Image (cartoon, rainbow, N blue to C red):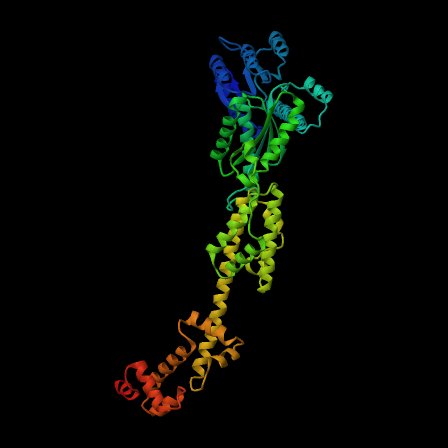
Length: 519
């Protein structure tokens, strides 16, 4: 909406224009309806104005004088004069002021509406032209700064640019700075949310650079800004730390910053920027949301580590056996090795190796990432989204925990189904001689394995369980007084009445006969 003020010392005319002109439909917001020109000028002094609609002849200050003052404040203000006097002098002065329209009273509403539509169209065109011009300038400036940092602009091209645009390209001391917005964002944010937050964060950084007059900047990529730092060099580290704090306080995204050596000529900016770009790569090892100083990129020699495949085997065994602490220990040992790598790409390749080994291990168990986690095979894309070794380590550890939980749950489920079948089989065949070996053969297990599983799952040995089931079944049958004791013994698998009586007494604390009397 364009901002306007309407000034006329005749309240009747003022009210008529208020009621009969569709201001909102025209895209105009009338900020004030004023019948006193001095009050109108006081308001114009304090507010931005796009359109002035004023009567020419008014007491104390004429509309022409008011328009001159408004034009001094904003030389692009559109001026519409209204006069009840067909006086050539007024019209001439209005034309000298380059009036946008001159109307006679009584005002023809349709004529005024047509004039306002034309003025709004002209303002739209001016705004579009300014935006295009500004966009072009920003694009060219961004391009020039990027070429200066990357070293592919010759002096003649730079000279031509400086002749056309007023940009303060440093000739002497400066340092190249690289600012990267970190990609990590809580999962509750969508990709669209991330894109919006990224744009806002980049804008925040650029506004900070402008406000603090730190130097010239350009977008290097979707998430990176290059800066030719020309402010006071002694305070550079503090200034960059404050910038990082500003980003951190703004919202969920953070920024990591690096810088190269200060140089004394424009040609050496390339070297300084190369240093900054190399340093930002150490975010993989040093972490994000911080300023990376040049000295931090020096690593000690790699210390001896145990065989990687041996650690991986132990880690995967711990995963299958639901040993979460052991998983953590192995993961920590593996990523101690990562700290000795010189290039971030090696961390990605090493992590991919771990994932592929895990996949092979799962295949041997007739499992897969797809069956357990619903993954596709885009492992490298998944790993490549992380910016630091710590992020990758945390993700791998969470993944192994999740797989371990799934495998354990499935194993428990399979065991539960197995032992439901075993206990059902036992209860259906209590009158028969059932041994652990026969049971193992029936369910396709080795006796030792099944015996171990049975003791872990049921809490008692197979023989103890069999005896317990027989005695409980005997109690039920003894309540039926029609059955003889020896018939009860036979139905629960005891061929010797003496042996049954002794076993029952040990289990129930009384003989079968006494138990029956109690019932």
